[in-house]
Length: 73
Image (tube, rainbow, N blue to C red; front, side):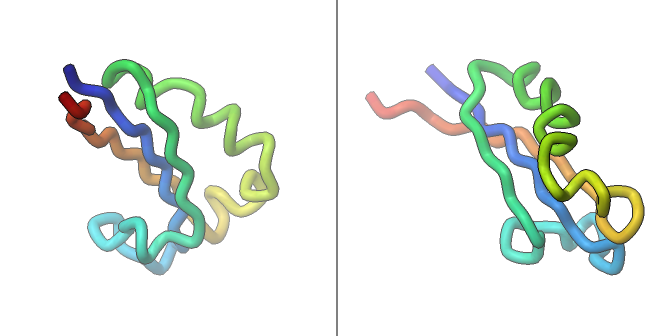
């Protein structure tokens, strides 16, 4: 059985999209979700509740990823 990790990376506008990785992002948010659809839902609300909301679209952008994690066993 597989699970997924939903990842939101906050990167400065100067960082090219393909270079926006965990180590280049100014902030990384991760949460385990049940399926790939879970990777696409709820991130706007989570970011809107943080101080990041004022910077997104001005000096930074969001990149979302869905990573498959193999369950042990």
